Length: 94
Image 1 (tube, rainbow, N blue to C red):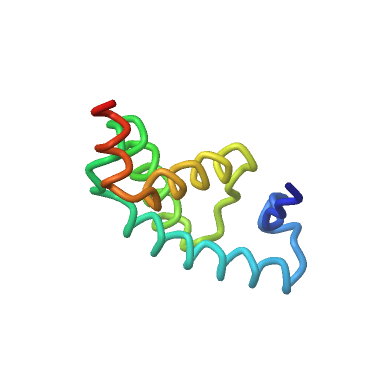
Image 2 (image 1 turned 90 degrees about the vertical axis):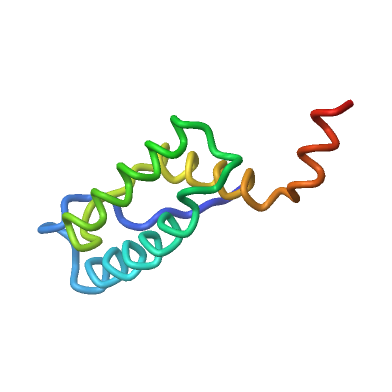
């Protein structure tokens, strides 16, 4: 799977277009993370992880660098939340 990530260098060393991309991605990610929080399917660790990402994005106005490992965790949480709740309940009953 060829996943791409936004630039992860120090913000001051990025070109103007990379800075704009990071701010745009940070803004979109903040909305997504805030939407994911509070889902009953999330564990307390996942909820805390999302809260820490949201706090970082808010404090830095989207200029923080999200590592590839953090992106992978966010993608895993997305997959969990996109799962139909009935499928989860049916699997746990079997």
